Amino acid sequence: MATTLEQNTLEAQPREAGTKNHARRVRQGGKIPAVVYGAGKESISISVDPRHVTRILNSETGHNTIFDLALSGGERSKAMIVDWQYEPIKGHLLHIDLKRIALDKVLKVSVPIFLVGEAAGVKQEGGIMEQMLREVEIECLPADIPSHIDADVSQLTFGKVLRVSELPHSDKIKFITDENQPVAHVTSVKEEVVVAPDAVAAEAAAPAEPEVIKKGKQETEEEGAEAPAAKAEKAAKPEKAEKKEKK
Image (cartoon, rainbow, N blue to C red; front, side, top):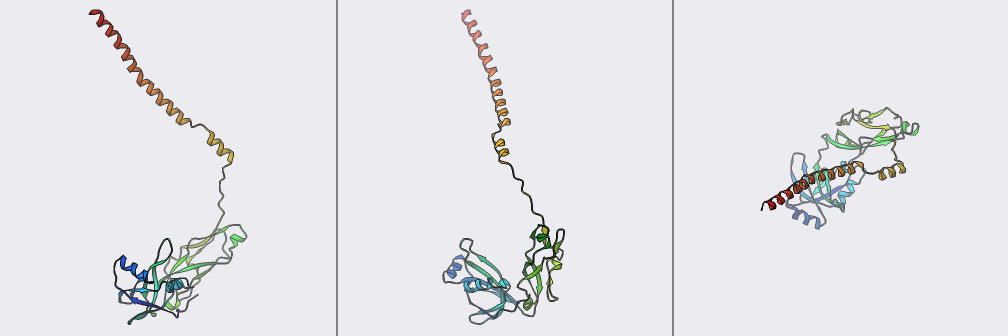
């Protein structure tokens, strides 16, 4: 399903590339720092409205959306979001990277894969569906980028694997991802081994024999070590008595 180019505009203002303190000041002003590059032109540091960026990322076409980037004071070009960073705790946008797009040149993008239908192996054989690949990388013109690719799994049974080569696509799209890579298959439900409560209680109540034996061995060795010292002490007493008699 190919998407049409978004008829919207992202306003941007030039900014000076600086330190973290500079980026913090940009955010405090209600904007987020960004960089735009590509199309044989130099990179430019800009600031944009995070609310507009969020609307683009949450749209049907997501980060593959192509829009007009209007830089105050001059440049206007087609662009798309190629990278973005969120603040980990509150989830606020921190920074985005934009790429200028030439409508007559092919580009590489990643497109999500949606599984459609109920697999025969799930419905009739009691299996579960497992999706191993959720995105596929493709190459096409900007106007031919699909918002997603629908994969029909209704005929999927045990032992059969849906691969990238079987995904529906037009001649305008070229798969970059290995066509032999598996996308989805039907697998059996894994059985969990449940230990009976009685067995757990019996194991917990069992004496720790190796520890007792080890402890007993240590005590024996300690007793053995004390024995020579005791004998030496007893042997020393008669000598003292003999010395007294001689005196």
